[in-house]
Image (spheres, rainbow, N blue to C red):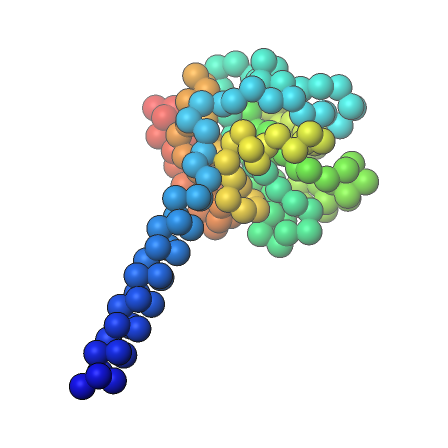
Length: 172
């Protein structure tokens, strides 16, 4: 009898610990910024780019990526191949990495994105993006309205079609 109650107590305590661990993990997950926060990034020509430089009157689509991330490679490649579906959207490709790593990455996965007026490649040399936008992992995809209000977030490149659907639905 004592062993059965003891085992039940241990199972109960383990369940409580698991619940607390899940609650703490869930509550510490970052929440995307509800409006576009102030920031300062660097363009490829080393000039500053801030939230005041955002393209007015367009959806604001932020893609936070890492060149070594397979999922990021697929995300950039998808955007590259489906660029015409994003052409009324301002696209900001943001990374923590240097131009020495980013340029070969873009040349391989985002060739048609280079030189587009609505696509801006940015380096986050001050490590602001994670703190201010709240990404969970790479790639992090954020869509904001033309009024800079949060619309949607995802960190799975397979869901890029949802962003296209949202953009198209809002344009009607």
